[in-house]
Structures are given as C-alpha cells and as structure tokens.
Length: 250
Length: 305
Image (cartoon, rainbow over all chains, first blue to last red; front, side, top):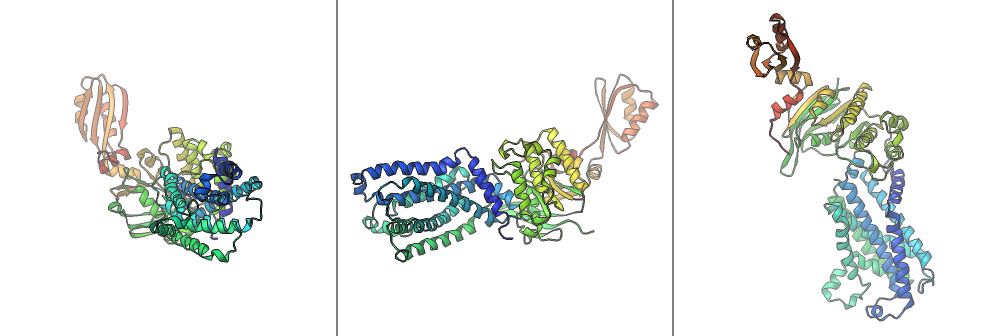
C-alpha cells in the first residue's frame, strides 16, 4: 500500500511534537497572544495615524495574522525536515518500506493540523473585536488560507531541500519569506510601488495570497479571485516540481 | 546453493571522489560476513548500495535474487538494516518506535514484547530515545532491524563508541541472529570484533576488496610469524634458543627472552628445547598474530581519515 504507516507515523509525530517543551506554546500560544495584543491596539484606535497612513487598518489584521501563521507553519516544516535530515532520521526511515512521500505527507498533515488549531483558537478569542464580529465567511476563508499555505509550503520544501544545516533552516526561511510580505500589498498598496517592484511583486505567490485572503474576508466571491487561486496553484506545482528534483535525504 | 548477496564489479563515485572503485564478493546463507577496512575505505558506501539506498555507477548487485535499487521496496520487506550514526525523533518512546516499525512491514513481524525482552529493553519501553545510553540506542536499532524477521541483517559499525560490556552483549546478540539461520552482513573497523564474530571477512582498501577469507586462514596466510616470551634465570639458555629450528631472532631484556620465528611448529620446538635442556622458566606465553596484524600488513600503518 502506497501510504502504509501514514496514520501511525502522523500520530507519533503529533505526540513527539506535544512533548517538546516549547512546542505547543510556541506554535499555538504565541500567535494567539500576538493576535490578542495586536487586536486590542488596532481595534481600540481605529484611526491610528501610523496605520491609516500606510493603508493598514483593522481589516488587514486577520489577513496579516493568517499569513503569519501560514509562514510559521512553513518555517517549522523547513526546520523539522532539516533536523531530521541532519540527524539521519530521514535516512533511517528511508531504509524501511516507508515511502518518502509518506514521510513528507505526515509532516504536512501535522503542520496543517497545527495551523487549524491556531486559527480556531484565534477566531474564538477574537470574536469580540470590531471587524471580526460581522458576517465573516469563516469556511471560505479557511479554504483560501489552506490554498495559500500549500503554495507557501511548496516554497518551504525548496528551501528545505537546499539548506545545508538545520541551524540555517529557520533564518534562511525567514530571510526568503518575510521580504515577500513587504511587497505583497498588505502594508503598502501595490499601485504605489515603482514598476520594477510591481513586476517583482507579481512573481511572488504571497502577493496573490494577500489579494485572495483580503477579498474572501471582505465577502468577495471565489470567481472574483480565480486568477489569484490560479497563480497560487501554478506556484505550488512549480515549486513542488523543483523540490522533487533537488531534495536530499541526507 | 545460491548466494544470499552477490556483488560484482561495483563502482560508486561522488563527484571526483571514488568511494568504491571495484568490489566483488558473495555472501552465503547463514554466515556472518564482515567488511573491514580503514575509515574512508568505502565500506559504508558498499553496504548502502547493497541495501538499495544508493545506486552504483557500475556493476551488478543481487540480494535474495532481487536488484536492490530497482526492487528496493520488495527487498526492504525481507532485510533488516542498522545504519551508522542514525537517530530517531528525540522524544519518541522505545515502544512507539518498535510499534511504528512493525506497522511498516506487510510481512509477518516478530512479537515486539519478546524482542524488547531479548534485547534487554523491557525496562526502557517508555523511555524517550534521547534519554537512552549509547548501548541502549544500538540495541533499539538492532530491534528495529529485526522486527520484520528479516532474512538478511545489515549492521554498519555496530559497536563503535560502546563500552566493552555493551560490545560483548551485542556480539552475543549477533551470534544469536546467525543461530536462527539468518545471514548477517556487517562492517567494522574493529579487528577484534571481526575476528571474534565473523565467519568470513573481506578487507577493503581505497575502494577495492584486497582479500577475502576466514579470519584464521587469513592470519595463517599473511602472518606466519610467531613469538614466545619467557622468563628464565638460566645463563646458557640464550645459546640453546638460537639453535631451535625456525628461530630467526632472540631478544633479551634482563631475564626476559623473546624468541621470534616462523611457522606453526615454533611453539612446540621451544617447549621441546626447554624440556630437553631442563631450562627452568618462571613465565611463558606465546604471541600469535591476529587479524589486526594482517590488517596493518595489508593496509599499511599510516594514519588516514
């Protein structure tokens, strides 16, 4: 069977994750806390000059937090793959009938579960904030975020394939992923960028992720964002193909 | 009988570095076969090619009649592997690892509780991997290599870094594997380990197999030198010792004599001489060459990495 061992390996990986001293708190607690704190600041001062000048408002907050969680997911995946590779765990698992795709799928599942739990908690604690209480399409937003996460995840796999050691995995991932945020249109509208940067921004999947998430959050239909979804899927396919070629097991 | 492992003309290079230049040998059912050689000789690469983890650049390999690279999943159902310097998840429990491994094989698996018991890990069932000692980790890796009741077991540098107690315990375990009719293929750079454990050894050097034989025959062929060390107060002894057939050299340090010569009869001849001349000795021991001497003779004494 193709994915034999998937269930058991996934369950073990979840248990192993929960046993880590900072594991659950670092991955779930900190984003939720950050959200609570930011939500209070932004929510209590809707017209804070610093934010309104940059075009950032309370409407952007859920999108920003959602993307941060998504990137957090990807960075932790990059890190764990590097640690497993450096420690020879990947190699040891490969010397069994376990298929490589099963090992990678396991980690994707664990990380996505983590993202889902974090998001659910966030929505629970954030219900009271202005802009959160209205008719927000939770389900569509969740699906949109899943698509975005998969797309960013595929970049993560490319990073995981090329980083030399586990020590560099997290910083290198951050250096590659966070600048994409600056160009994504989340903080500064794309139209204000010089043409060169606009061009670069349109090559980055995060830009489409922001456009999709903001639109869905504000109640747009999926058809209005078909090009965003298309771009994200294309980048997913391209980066997955690249990582399949360059991935190293040891 | 069809050999369990057949390696013929295998070559493997990493870029410009040739790890294995030319390796050919066969391993028979039910034997413990050791691949020995200095660090960097190509032992691990050879083993990983046989396990299907690497694709050789040239040559053919058959394990249980299967091509290890093309039929790797079929092969892995029937072999057990312990890798050099492998790790598991830091916080995985011993029983979880064994349970996971057992779930990976479609074939029959052995009883996990009994396996842990045989390997002395019952007390450590609930311990995290990171809290095990070096010997316990190695025993766990042996357990994982045996969980699918494999026909061939691969052990790479099994006892490196272990204390003598753990090493002897693991040697007993490996002999136990052979007694159950399994074939064992191991690499080591500990000559004592090879000599005590292996039915046959192949010496590897710079990516080539330079000799294959049983440890005893290898010693006899390459190192016929023998020496007898004895203590005596007898003043005329030295002269008598020099007359013994086959003696090449007699060294004296105080009342201690070292008599060196060639051939299996040397010790008998020395004893004969002692009794004939009524030489009274207070100490007597022989120095026989070991696999280590053969190894140094064939691979040189320079230090390498």
